[in-house]
Length: 330
Image 1 (cartoon, one colour):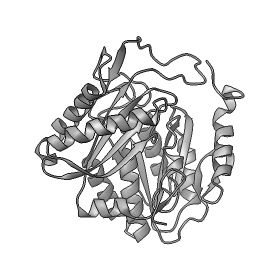
Image 2 (cartoon, one colour):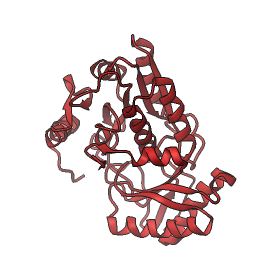
Image 3 (cartoon, helix red, strand yellow):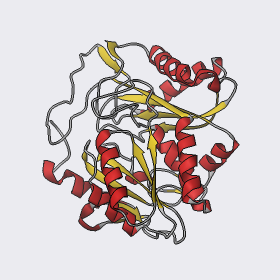
């Protein structure tokens, strides 16, 4: 295992120290490295908090700031944060209008955020993201997994929170944004969790995993390596089949997300293939992102996220945002 680390037990804390120092104009670090939060929480605003295992950077800490999250709780690599982290974050960014948890559908995340909500004194609601169409259940989740579509939910809900919407309205919006979003990924290699020191799974030189999860969980099937066009066809077909008639004739936000080990040249090539396939099936891409936004350490591969847009979701996506990983209009 070759990694730029000092010791496996200090990877997370040293990384968080560097992350917050590099973005000190936007972020501050919570006591005992329990969370990162906005430098200046906004009074009277619903607080948005997310989190999950580390190793998916820039998710979630990279989306803390104006127009997105107020705080993010990082667990150890691929491990859920603990309820005390969420409680500490909620107290630190409480603006007096309640708190919305945005939680990816993994058993550990769901259980720990639920425990934190039960122990909190303020009003808390939760949006559960489950955009992965690859499998209905997996090793870590009951029901569909929450993956890269979580970024879209955090962005549109964050914009609405910045406008001053109340907690119930933000919960409803988050559920609606999640329902409009579908994702699917493909892995060309495994990744190596520092504490494990060995690859999470084995893939042959001529194999790929279709529908892989962001922690390296198995997908739909393991198949022979195919061309970019064939891989895009698999992902687009799975996503549009799940949407049914909803997608035809509309426009969409598309995220072509890298898992950490695939160069941008290949990600843009994949975006081109997906765009052509979507256009043939009546879907126009009006908003897009290409790059590493929801990674799996150094895994090679990518995921495709399609979110169907209406006027409100489009406007909220376009609204100003200023975070370490997303920045426009500010």
